[in-house]
Length: 56
Image (tube, rainbow, N blue to C red; front, side, top):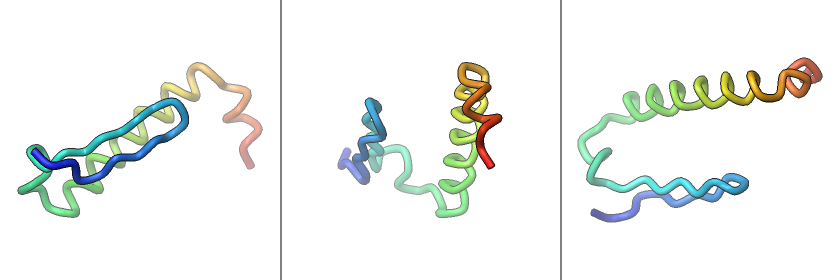
């Protein structure tokens, strides 16, 4: 189970290992990341509506 990607985003550390994504296509990975981003943005918007309203 090798680490494919390790990234620090603020206080969050994301580690992606190849045991999950070894046989997943690039398109499937993009779709998974899109869904994760949508959920994260929705959570952020719910907690910080003023920050979203200020975005151009």
